[in-house]
Image (cartoon, rainbow, N blue to C red):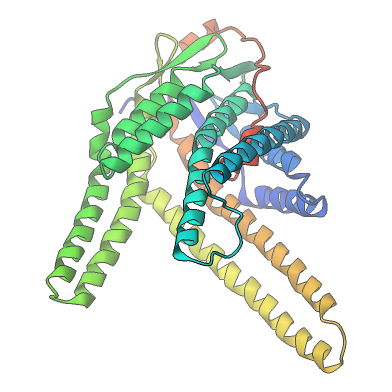
Length: 398
């Protein structure tokens, strides 16, 4: 692997305590404002994470605002409401209704289920559309060394391709997953910019198959379990083999994500010469996920144990005294909300941030001389502040 120590090396300075405090405080404000503050909350978390990441000693800057996200969300909700209303009108015309009362026959149950899945199918193009728009918005609101990132408006092209490749992957039982991964990454990379310099995705999709080796092993275990169960040899051994295959496949999926990311990063270029390198360790990522998950699990057990104890102590006294249980329910509900905020905050700070920090620290470029020739690009005013992504709940923690 090419050494990046003398070139442009990434670093991350964020810490768990600071991020958790920020998440907890902004989540409380979100609850108190009945969800309205969540746009400003996500913006503040992004500003923290972006400013904690740096390359070559220069930190990244996030310039998005909560207000533009809020306004984008309102516009998206109106458009989605009209679209879904039209979808339901079409379904109703053909005798299908997702909002029907309890079905009284098998036919009505099938029709209601069909209406539900057709509605989900109708939303899928918008989900991929929102995914690309969200990525474009984040790039448009990201700066490094004062230079803006950006992406071309191609959300519908991405949505159509994503649906097509997703269908191919399903039909081939996952065998064409590398094709889907490579083609979609190439589509978004080839339309991304840093200032006046354009990104390019090189390489071949068939080179991603080695990253699938553990997925194939997991699938082999599942097939073996089915064979064992079919021959009635030992149902216990079949279940054990199935469990082993499931766990191996989970690890294999993490391995695939990391190794495909590594291959795609090594074959990315910026401009004519600048290339990138990364070396995330699968074992380290899995260790973070496992130990972080165990730690969060312990906190979950303690928090819900406390909530259960409070409920058990309060409810009998209120009932015996003939009083209303309303105050007790309010207290328990408030504790439940605080517990969920705590769990999500710990997951973000103990797991997500640590994995992100690891990936950033092992990523960089051995050659950065071309950066001096890159000029500023015009501000992208076409991004919709990822309103559709917020309305469809697309995206992760930040």
